[in-house]
Length: 494
Image (cartoon, rainbow, N blue to C red):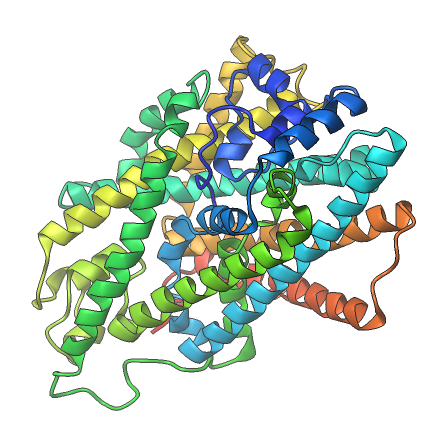
């Protein structure tokens, strides 16, 4: 999910210089937030094609090797979405969710490779025909469908990053509740935190915040290590319970096929990286090695995700809490307590120190990620051709727009206070179009427009199947996620 704060980019990247971003960023004063948030940077203006090509070529000469690009992609993908993984098997079963993870990872990977082909075809034609090269997702949409393609990308990004910002607000409120020893519930904490979010939203740029992106990445890595390590130790506790009934703690397969819908939604978001493809491509020494870098990155991410989900669920089974920090820091004394006694009344081992450590790590990551995600929304509205004149930078309308976005994010967070459910709901709507449908469709249109060779019949059949996965997520995944949001008790995994 990719989500969010993975690439430190306080200033414009080589890609941005090639696409004219330096001028745009200086104008709006945001310090290239899309690159910092998810490297999905777009531009409505570009320098003369000859200048762009020469600058891009000069930058690429000292660009990323394939393994550096692969590492960058791994860092981009792994974000706060990892916190929702251990809970997925409560409905979909561990075996079912591992298969879904494999399928979603393969879908995003194949769609990203299709996007790579389209970008390469478009940029090859741009050099020959004197057109502006593709350096962002918006450029890719514009190359495929003109202004309509750009509009589709911007709309998807607006909804996605607004939803992710609301999800981050939920996690921040949960962390604050943990650190205050439940002085207020997470839902209650959202109100006093709203002014803080508002002040963050009024930052003129994110250059200062972007300097802390490496620290945020370290926080995520340490959190993954804590989840796996603590869960591995806790898995030995329930094996010592005298009253454990075989098969009562874990679900290996979903009760019905529809139960895996929300897992598809969450994992589409967790693997989300395809908005980064153009920006990574134009920074590579040899873009033809992108498939190697991309496949390597996605394989590494799959191993990390499978480990976090598998070990986390094996440790806490069907009694895992919606807030993974709660499960990591408190354990029931026996099976009866796990399933029939409220969480606050569990009498098993507790670790207040670990609760503080994990909450601080999560809070550190989120306080960097939230402004970067919010700034993507602001940046899009400030530069999008149909809205930029209504919210010019420095105007009272721009300030009102920023505060309204924050109010909307907090409102959404108060409606759905379960991070996993909210994240799945957002990704069920935005994940399939952003990560599969649009990349494949745009790639087809760009390559056809450039007179490129069509895909083989076998690959077209594969893409049709991937479209089916996306359609399943958009329908069943959305319905399951919406049902979980509207009726959280009846949608509980146990």
